[in-house]
Length: 122
Image (cartoon, rainbow, N blue to C red):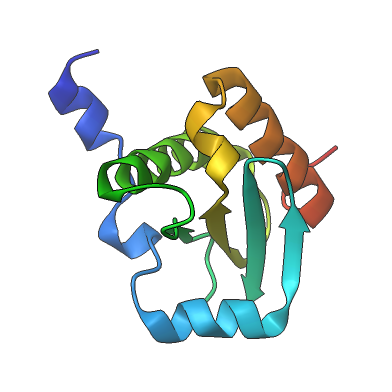
């Protein structure tokens, strides 16, 4: 797969949460599921449509490390987005351990959290 093909498969702007108000609504609803590498938050509402928001605080590392953590979470979500069910938005918050996690461990945890949240069929 060429880089151009990979970029074409990325999440569209309409598939991402970008405004702070939506992030705040997600946190206010309080539906969160904890893992070792990330925390998955669910947001339900009329406009929710399996969009993704990613967050990595300074606790995760410097700017380069945070950007890498966010890219990894976006890619993991993108690869499994079609399997997820429901009309919820998802916010993934990175934890410091995510930086050193193997790719398979990261995917396993995302799928486990999605099952707990009810957006991935058992």
